[in-house]
Length: 584
Image (tube, rainbow, N blue to C red; front, top):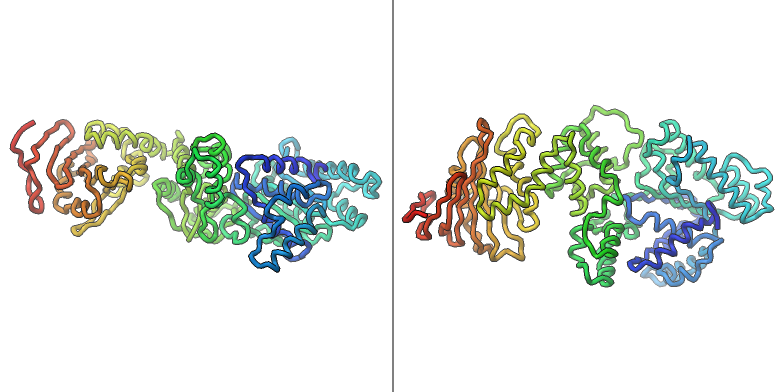
């Protein structure tokens, strides 16, 4: 076993994976790859996925299985690959036959193009180091090789000569193929030269029986030099998607080994990526970290660059910041990502929509967003936390939204306690003119502002905008989630600009937005909230009226005063004024 040929480190890595408590057997991918060996038009496979989706684990497994210098029969005879995967008996027999035929038959060439890159001055010296390692491996495997006597500075020449001498083909496994392209270590010219080096190394070379290449960034349409590959990315992978990330069934299986964490909680935090057919995929790294530590929390910061996401959000592209806020709010956005591949050598474009498309493609590629049925969305709670943190940038005009979200727990608490003074103080902390990205502040902007002020209320409520009844639609209604549906308080909010909070309450009564709630299974008290924003005074006013489920008034609270009314007062007629028979 060597540095390039039959890499020892990859073998040890895979053996380590087998010893892990939460190991998931993905070896059936070998059955798929065995069918492609020595098929000239099919033997080039490139699979790109986001970080921490198990790409390197697959490469380690392939190196261990195919490598001639590694005795792996005992390892793989215990795994799924040895049993075949097809439901057709004839096909399964062929898979088992191929498993035995190709196991340990080839010398593998393993190249990691992210390994120790920064210790080299330029691309030429980096590639030269690979050639030097190859020579060391040849000396170890066959000290009398004729190739060593006339060892060339060109690695491809040496591989061709080695093939001519031994008549034995190689399997080439490339990890992090795109690192050199996406990293600023090398110049544009060097990155172009790297692509041509890959073409020279791979395309139409008879010394290769099979090539597997993986990374994060897809091969773009501009890299026509590598058009020999059949490429599978997070959008179009209809063949191998089940081998990268965990499926729901696999996470259920893991939860059987750890009764401390529920599948439901793991699902809400780490699920949400979609395969080409809509099947849900989990981030493997985060699931394993949570199971090992018995703690469900954000592990993404250990996998991705926080600054990278901040830069993406703050690109000066019209509409992106507004879209990001919508995504954080749980909405999906329809976009065209037909050219999914990230443009490696980005040209300036005056087409704003095209720029957005490139940006969202990059976000999907790196796993920050998922894309399905023509819509992008934030996959899960873990990633939503990353987006919220990314808002907290001193140079970003989105920082105020971060503060609003962070204050949203207190906002809900003060609302349920009917503390209108504190509610208005919280709203005043994020000046409207700083939050709204457009020039004009209107009712729609106020609604969005209030929506973010109650952001974390989504954990307890289904928040619905434009909730319909027979008389119209309310601005915002908070309906308790199922577990608290019967007794939880319902919150109905009506908003006004340059009016009064009392007028907002009157509007709720005129439209009777509270009608029909009991029929839908909601029996808790009802809070009617009127909020007004005065543009001239730059101030909020607020009124809260609390009712039981029969619309008997329990209390009225407004900024600067609190008046409690007796239960004798009722709502009659379209907007009959409430009358008090006693004072508090």
